[in-house]
Image (cartoon, rainbow, N blue to C red; front, top):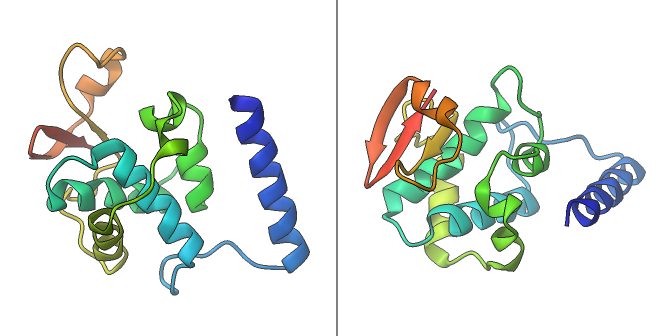
Amino acid sequence: MIRRMRAWLAAAAAAVALLGVAAPMYAAAPSSYNTWLIAKVVAAEEGNRSFTDQVGVAAVVLNRLNAKGFPKTVAGVIYQPWAFTSVVNGYFYNVTPSQTALRATEAALNGWDPTNGALYFFDPGPGVTNGWIYNQPVTTVIDHTVYAR
C-alpha cells in the first residue's frame, strides 16, 4: 500500500511539474482536487459524526498547511506517513465523500475553524496506541473528538 501511495504521489508531482502549476496556498481559491482530497479525509475519519466535527477535521488539514513541521500541500499533509489513521489502514482509499463532508470542507476553506487552531485530533480510548497525543494541549472537544495543538 505504501509503495502504491508513493508511486501515486510521484506521478502526481510529475504531472504538476509538467503543467507548471504551483501548489495552492489557501489565500487563493483551492482546486477542486484539493477540496476532494480533504473531503475524503473528512469522510474517512469522521464521516459518521456531526457537521461541526467534520469541519474540525478539514480545519486540522488546513491548519497543518500553515504550521511549522508539516508539508505545505494538501496532498503532502494527507499522505504524510502516520498522519491519518484512515490513510494508514486504507479506508481513505475506498471512501467517497458525502455531500456533508464536501460542505464541511467548504466551510473550513471559507474560514470556519471550530477547533481553535488544532493540529491533531483523536477519539480517546483503547484505539489510541500512541500516548504522545494525550500530552498535547487540548483546544476543544467536539462530539467525542478531542482536538489538540
